[in-house]
Amino acid sequence: MQMSRRARRIIATGGLIGIMLLGGCGQQSPAGKQPPPEVAIVEIKAEKVSITTELPGRISAYFVAEVRPQVGGIIQRRLFQEGSDVRAGEVLYQIDPAIYQAAYASTRATLARAEANVTSIRYRAERYKELVAIRAVSQQDYDDVTAALKQAEADVEAGKAALEAARINLAYTQVKAPISGRIGKSSVTIGALVTASQPMALATIQQIDPAYVDVTQSSTSLLRLQQSMAKGTLKRDSANRAKVRLILEDNTLYPLDGALQFQDVTVDPTTGSYLLRIIFPNPKRVLLPGMYARAILEEGANEQAILVPQQSVNRDPKGNPTALIVDAKGKVQQRMLKLDRTIGDKWLVSSGLVPGDRVIIEGVQKVKPGISVKSVPFYANGKNNGGQDRNTAPSTTELN
Image (cartoon, rainbow, N blue to C red):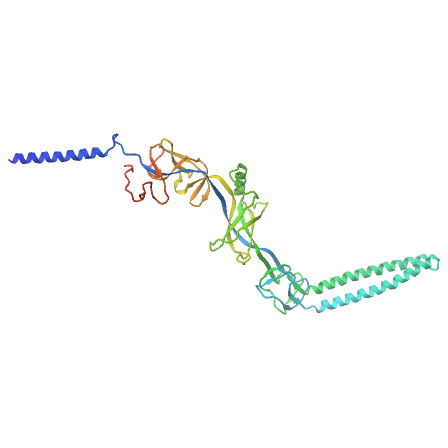
């Protein structure tokens, strides 16, 4: 009886082991290998993108005029409010005009004396002309009076010029605005002594509507842009215009677009860059001279651009960019890339990929070139074709 119980235990244990072995064999593939790993891929398609460049710069005034006196004297009045808008020709300062009024009056009297003198000599010359014809006076006397007349006429012209200079100096006692714009603080007060063409400006006027934004761009970028335009990969509109947007210091986008005014013809040898000047309308005076800003320059449009997500690009030990693709046979291949720039969260690829290539986005860590894989479409929201979340669904395709 005891032997019978032991035999039954042995038989039961053997049957359980056999069932477990059969179950384990049923989970293996017929060839005894694990299924190929699953990767998420994106099929490359050529698309049209706008090529932009972000450049740092400073805002400068459209016109700048430093107000300086043209004559010396004491400031009697200041006729503007600091920080206000002034018009061209508006009187800003009044210099004491007393000595200039006296000089003007003296010069006018000198001119009147010269004009009276020339009248007397002219009459004498006319009489001598008649008398020399009948030999009543000598030819020498006639020549002398003719020369005296010309000298008197020259004195009149000199007097007129001196009177005009005195009038100009008198007018300069009113210091006027050379341009329209916004005037800053005054560097002098009433009672201050100023001199002609002094180095210190009395005030500065700036016209800031429109306003300039001066940015710098490397000469390498210019050469690359010219090559792209020559190859036809980069195109501009029919007017060949370059629109520009502006990002202010607080990272807000300026609401009005600007236009490229000109680019400098000289490259700075110390920095390897050249100047670009952009003009922006500034009706609300938001842009102030000296402010820092970032200009987004639209270089053109690439109608056959190849874009890949940044997460699909890796680097080899030498730092060269690479990407893994799935070929027509379902095997992984490595491609060496040449990258141009980032556009959003993607790389713009210059060479290495063509439309139709299937680039691996997810699963790069568990594959290598030459092995077979199972590819599924990549979805940015993490959903696969079956609607299940790829990030939470249990994976049965990872390599052991």
